[in-house]
Length: 378
Image (cartoon, rainbow, N blue to C red):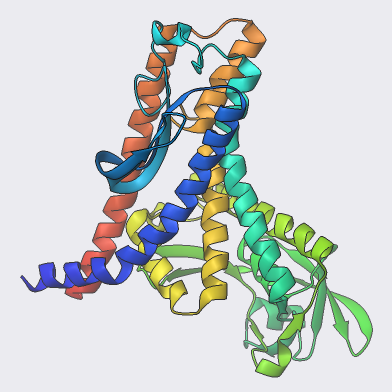
């Protein structure tokens, strides 16, 4: 009973904020599909936030049913010739009707499908850009405040007061850049260009592998060289930027989110990182609640991060996802005729099986970590 009470408290504490964030991101994603579908002359039967039975809804003047459903972990736009919410296969009889999705050209169908992830990227870039131009950039310089004894940095000759200006020839503007490169380069020798008393010198160090558990109990590995940063308030600079620069930085941050996720997937596949750190809705709910406690600016940046990653993950070439649709459309464009119905159905079944296995795995990770924290075990 104590566990159930704790679990109910956890859901109330973390779940509500996460669902609000997810609803915003999903709405923008589906709105991208919806707007381009309308633009291409596709008749939209339903615009749904969530799956399953409807909580409430209404019809617009075009006959589209806008609905909110009970299972709030996604959403969909359903076209007039869809047999299911995934838009795979379609109904041949209905595809002959005016406004049918399957009757449109390959380019039009690809535009409709690609519009969802693109809308997520646009949301992320807009949020980052708006924060950059209104709040400014918080920059923590890559200044060495202290060096851990016997660490790779100590052995490499680093000293307090050193300012790191480049790694392997790549310019370093802030401490986060240093952390990102070092963290993903365990076991690889890096050449650091350091400004010491106005003179540039080159120091070499090989990040050691550090295995830790995060606040959620997940194991992760990262590279460390043993440099401690200066975190005093007077060391953090807030830089104001104009709108053009803010937009370019916002696009860059969105791109950085995508490459960071891609790098993380690569590290898990190559076993440089443990698959145990993969999480699902429960982990995202916990992180969302913790970020919300930090204020509105971190929260908006977290929404941008989630939006960029949902856009990217939807582009993976897995049937059922948007990327799977685009893969079949590319095949159709090259072959000049669509893949056979059997091939599409097999792809749909394989894609669905992969997603189900992934969801089971990440949710199992989440549940086990919640269990350990609530029961004090592990």
